[in-house]
View 1: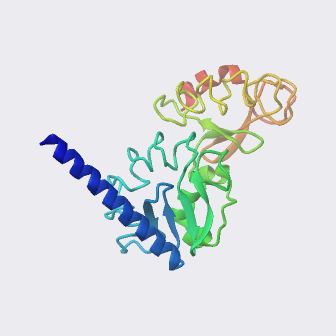
View 2: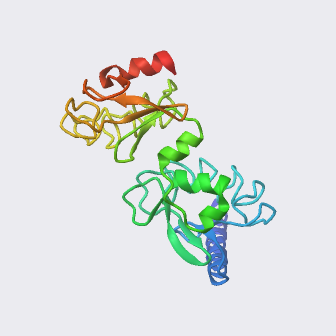
Length: 253
């Protein structure tokens, strides 16, 4: 009995997969703007929120936070930070593709090593605040600009690499205090605590631990530039020592 159920489930999944692929082909041929997974799964059209296929429709299959085909479902393979086709997985090599008016525009991902990357932060910000800019391919909005608009407190490297949020919440994935996250782990390439990485080595000009660097990471508080994270006493402006950054965060955030 269970074998029959398993076979039925497999057949239904295969049928749905074919339907989704045909739906994606149809969307492409009509010159529409949409997001699609690299497995062929349509992830929503960039249309008004009343369209059932719209990525804006919170009650539809692509905009609902509980839908398995939604990038807003943090447990789905398209929205989870561990998902195989997710916009939030920093190690994903097969992130969703964005098409604008039927033409490929880029890959929506936090993985900076993927070709034609459109930052997830940029995509989501434009999706929520400026659809026209998104449809006109204005993807050059910096992550720092987005986070500043949101009034966040964070650290950012001179090359534009986000280095973590200033929050005492150790469970926040973006927190510098999250020892398992991309910005708090001593093994992560985007962590200032990785003594062998570009942002943590005492020999890297991008690192706050390089006492001779004139371009150390910047500190933003509530979206405004506060100062620098550096061991260099000669950098002009307010400075926080990187060796005391964890306690400073705990005391102030």
